[in-house]
Image (cartoon, rainbow, N blue to C red):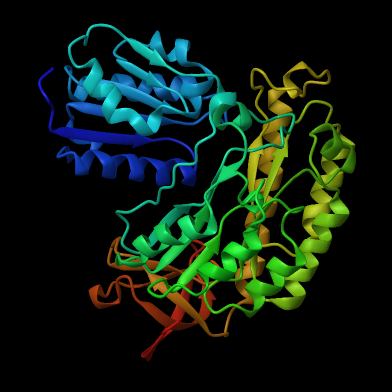
Amino acid sequence: MKHSHTVSFYTLGCKLNFSETSGIARLFEEEGFARIDFREGADIVVINTCSVTDQADKKCRQIVKQAKKLAPAAFIAVIGCYAQLKPDEIAQIEGVNLVLGANEKFKLIEHIQAWESRLNETRVIAGEVKQVKDFVPSFSYGDRTRSFLKVQDGCDYFCSFCTIPLARGRSRSNSIEATLKVAREVAETDVKEVVLTGVNIGDFGKGTDETFYQLIQELDQIDGIERFRISSIEPNLLSNEIIEFVAGSNKFVPHFHIPLQSGSNEILRAMRRRYGRELYEDRVSLIKTLMPHAAIGVDVIVGYPGETKAHFETTYEFLRELNVAYFHVFTYSERNNTVAVRKSGSIPMKERRERSKMLQILSEKKKRQFYNNQLNQEFSVLFEAQEQDGFMYGFTENYLKIKSLYNPEWINQLKKVVPTAVNADGTIKAEILIDEPVHA
């Protein structure tokens, strides 16, 4: 293979993966590679994988097949969580040239260059996950409006259903000073909003005397970024001081995503979660007391082994009473090498799907109720570039999705809005206060 000049990326999974793909893509661009769209058929195709559901294998095969169809001679590298967990399985997929584990993926260019002369073989380089100790910072760029900034990686929690500690290693992060340096790089771009991301971001600074609370205080001072959004944070790490700080901050927005997983304390214990439903309720209550308009999102898993109908009903009722805005509902899937896969009391898949559907319907009701409660108040919306059928969209600080007639001058601009009605498609119609741009 002569030194190739086109590379494309396909990312599966979470915001953290998108952030890391962006970081790796920038390394390729610095080396003179031209990044093109996956659909254009590049010389080198990098697939960044996920392992959260049992579809990882199937999805990875599909993308490899697609890449080979677009460019039969493409060099295909598979990286990410699934590549760390099942490297040999991926190596068996026809067309894969290189499989890199968690430690090796950030040295992808070097591995590709070392492998240029031996294209017909498949190389697997995935060390033991306990050897993964380095923190490699990254941020996503490409969307002018928003960037995902990676502040933490790995997890020490070993919840019984989860493979992430096995795929990403122990919890680790940079110093506050090093994290601020990367945030200032983001501030140099056009990006107006930064989403802080990681596997367990509340664990930032673990093993040092720095904390996530200290980090957000420092980030709040950065010029050039108008909004910070905290992505998913564990309820036991979402302290009073963090909630109080966000309530008084100009830049940190009133939007929290807090994993619950179950409303039954018995199931939470079986899942090895580090809190009970009482603590969760307490977090929600404090947020809504200090920020009545805050949006709170919830992760919940249905069909965990041993989850009886009574357990599920307890979760359903707990969520129905909770003052939250929406749920992300996950149907439990068996994952190798986890404690849960060995548990008795497996729930039939049909029953899991029915429970999932019930919670999705409840989530839609909660979202509509939350939206209706926000009408006729003043918010700021950050409009995005994409035009769809003459309309443009953007999110308010508390995650209301605003739909407005397309105006190219409003792209990547913060505008004052007053929501007036909920549209049939679940977006919000709003009055735009034209003469009042927002300055953070």
